[in-house]
Length: 168
Ligand code: SME
Image 1 (cartoon, helix red, strand yellow):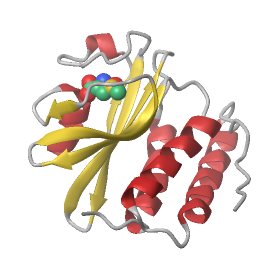
Image 2 (cartoon, helix red, strand yellow):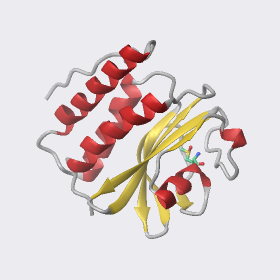
Image 3 (cartoon, protein in one colour):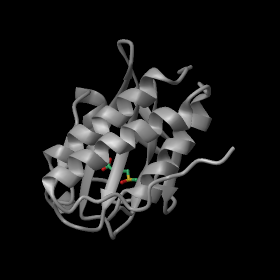
Image 4 (cartoon, protein in one colour):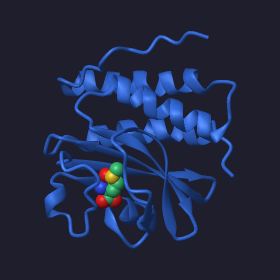
């Protein structure tokens, strides 16, 4: 199978960014069509984001296991393996089930620095039915890389993924 991925998505203006996130969600839909395996879909989703979204230094999943998160498919440097719900930006997302958008990671109490290059972070809950099954974590070397439009755009893409995947 061959799959055409848009080169770097254009995020230079608000209108371009909206269109880019619509394209990203459509690409997620096509990429996972006919496949519901969790590892396959999470790996493909991470690779798609890594390949097409600019200014990232980490993109991937932490899977919910009890009151702990365990690293799942991702792109970027090796990362911390286990994060309790009580720790870090990912833990805050898992606890609250709300998107965490951190403009300056150094100002976030308890931020876990897996890569010292990270300056800003966006973490989204992955909810299947009523269950928190994972979080999707994005790091950027640029301070304040993620705005509300990025959060909305990734939330839409994550929703497509959550609905199209079988979660254990
Ligand atoms: N910074 C995250 C930890 C995961 S790494 O960024 C890949 C946190 O504070 O939860």
